[in-house]
Length: 331
Image 1 (cartoon, rainbow, N blue to C red):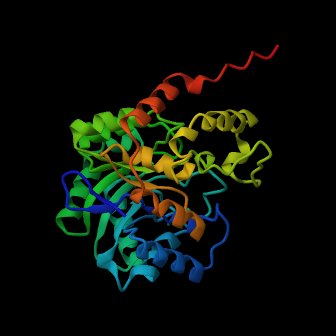
Image 2: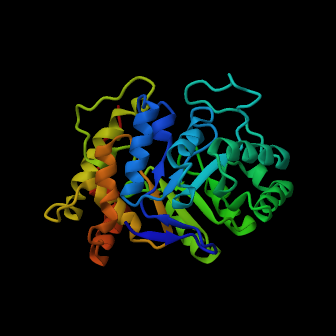
Image 3: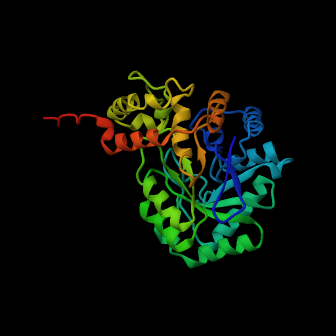
């Protein structure tokens, strides 16, 4: 495993992080507590020290499971969590993929942070993120006064912004770096979906802001397991995508074989190595929901880096839509 430090801090993260949503959100199957704790322990044994969660994952369970796994070994891990959704007074507001109401007032964020500390069983959070924050909240001085106060009090070591829920949020990300000097952004970025991630990374260089990358495998496409016959369960967000997403994705990854064939590397590992090529990508958060994914992805940092020629070829492919012919318009 290799490690990187968030700019302007002494917070060090493993290049491969673990997003606890896969074990606690219910979208990747049910994971009994003992199974989840065992997998988290295995991750730490493999050198994974960065764990990302949120207060909303499993209505707090995503934080509680970290306390169960690492409560006696807190100093060995770096914990990033999120707040800003009011599921305390709106327990029944969320249904399916819809969101809870947000409360980004300074008063609520202090309350949410302190509740997270209790569930995590710790007296500090390494990286506290505003969860899918909107522009009107980013413009609130009292919100960032509160975050700064929480930092002075030692309850958080740094604050960051988690952008989402879907890909995009360019204005919010750029504003947070420019005006709020946030330590890090959590963004969607991968070989197949490079925008607006490229803009965030370029702006981050001068803003001294690191990146936490989620969806590094483009909703599983870059794990190399899909075929034209692949289907997704009802309720899975990929089930609502048009068939063209699957067809075009498979065509694109055919052009990426040069990254991993004859290199003793999987497509999933190559996708991570592409991200590791940029020093501003501090950590990556692939979907890990079993030991197979964990072992594969945790091995990626130790594999040979991609070459400058590899990166230039990927850039050319992306600039030219992987040289796919446009489908004729329907008559």
